[in-house]
Length: 548
Image 1 (cartoon, rainbow, N blue to C red):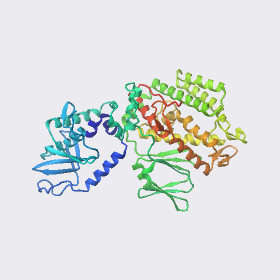
Image 2: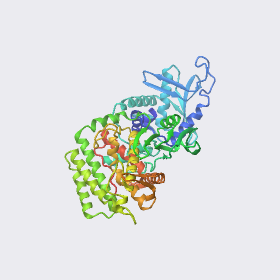
Image 3: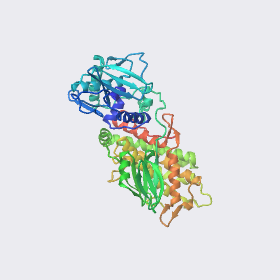
Image 4: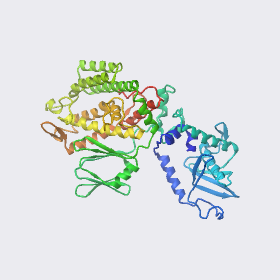
């Protein structure tokens, strides 16, 4: 923690105050190196029984006066003193200049955050009666071993960082670094969004390519009746209804599992998925979301408390709802302009409703604006579809649901369910309560916030998937069960729709505000985190994504 608070106070805050953490290649490799080092002896020389009866595999120390606890991975006994040792994945600096922490000068032979971490270990040794005046840092990057003497300046800098860490635990989130190279290798760069935050605050216009364009891992869909999911080693095993293994999927490659219909999942597998932060969503055979199994909500309780406070304020709720509805109407109009032949009247009405959304006086009036815009939009929706020899009414007759009565509405309903599932997962990852929103009416069991935030993305994700899947004949009329009062996708249609939806979610687009290419699945995360910055007060406005 002291290493991180000196490296970047915002990183410390995200990890240890808000409880957010994500692995990247550097953190995984560092953890593996620590585990390898733990297999070796922790004390280099034989010591007398006056210290320890047995060589410790690791040493946990604490001191109430320092208000500090720590784990020492390795120590060396030299000339009657104890020297803590730390291995680092990176390379040592060139020692050409002096570092300053809290006004105290530190040697340039090692990075200041590493020196402070090592010095904190020495302070714990000293507090527990073991003399320690120097330690060692070994940098694997350039295979350099550096001796660190615990000078008065380093000790003062370490105590400064201890005090700083304590004060940050009760403060607001620190501002992000400006144009810092530290951001490129930070495992939380796409949670922090340093350049994007400064850009929206108006304090810096330089947006570097820091945020990864795609989410690592994919979504697994299992919809075959009678299938069983279990765990073997580090893999998820899929068996058919006859008990025959169909496929083995590495758990590390998953970000979500969706179960549709009569599919069984073992308790052992659920435990492993929860432990790895992988949620499981459950859909009926008709495509209705009935629940989500997810890990405990341990992240960011401070954000949820601000969510409950701010979203109960009528003016804040109305302003957020206005921005969301404006963006939704804008995106509906863009989809029509790109793909259809909507009349000038429809396009003009949508433009007018988009403007009126920002000047409504209450949520009821805004709800009427949103409903009227949807009526115009779906009246022109068939103009974006290739019907061929099929009567247009057979594939879509207005917007209908519960149950959907035609193929297009069947796909729209399933697509909105999948988008809702993804938005619930994103809210959980950010630390928001997906059930406490600002626009949709609060009904027990309804994920109002997830429904609010997904409004912007309905046209540009789900509607776009449906239009493309139908027009390119990925899904055709024979992929549906069509009854007198309902329409349902067959197995072939479901599989094709799942593929089309995931292709869209992983498709790269140029972000209209920040200018870099990013996938739609990543955009959901970025936009929700920016929404959380508004709730925290870091951003004064929240502008939902409006595609060009």
